Length: 382
Ligand code: DAH
View 1 (spheres, rainbow, N blue to C red):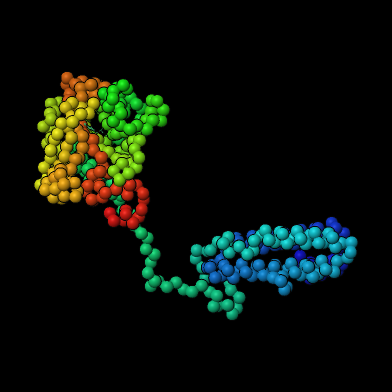
View 2 (cartoon, rainbow, N blue to C red):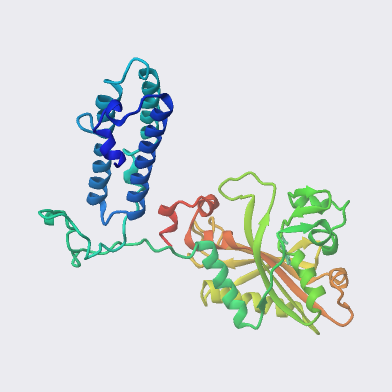
């Protein structure tokens, strides 16, 4: 006799007269419930409506108020049980109810895997043709997946890289977590030198910083490759700055470095003028003004005539006619020496520029924060 047959009989008819018998009878029933659930989950369902139907059928089979297995147990086992057995049967019945609740027949719908392909041989009961999954409508439009695009800062970085790659430079990179030696000392910025304050540095410990510029990679590359050397170094830099429309604690720079025999300031001017014309258009002019950086001597600031108003003064150049581009200079002999290169044989020039600023100028964007907030409404315009 199966457990399902037993549900239709009373305990007396089944010859059960002690608590132990009751217990094993209920255990058998719990096992059956568990098995039915497992079987359904392992079979899955061909589609969503079918899934809901199968789950509801299983739930009703066990829990329906009228005729469900639990209510039959109540009717046939519990109610007519003898005085002696009633407490045991009651306890087991409650246990069974808790057990059935734990199987979550109601929530099974979500757990039930949907079969990918509705099987053609699936045996449906007669008269249920309507339950067969509808054939797919191949004329419906497909799902449109929104395509991403290159981030404006990355795009600007690549444009700049491309110009220098054409000139025979190659791309080098270095660590963002950097020693104070490479970030400062080797670049001719000794510990006590006031210019260290120019870089609002984020320290990790007394000898480790988040690099404040890409210049430390100059030294690393000199050590690694020696001279001659023609590289650009794009990368993230960090400074202890409060975020506002022109400052971000994380930003991007590109460093340029050319080291060879007989390199002069004229090479620096010529290269950067060519670069500015490639990026902003043939008609722009460049302007070099003296400046100071500890790692270059002499040092300069490069500006380009405004590519929007051609130097007349407008919103982009803040009415000045010029746009500041970068710092540059001839590599300081001590910096060459620190990189293991003999300054009597080789010399060179270097520059450093802010990629985010370039992208802001190019696209007339007034808040650097927009680049880093990940707002799709902003990013999808590029
Ligand atoms: N490292 C400088 C900064 O972050 C920028 C710079 C200026 C880099 C002049 C250079 C250079 O290589 O020659 O402010």
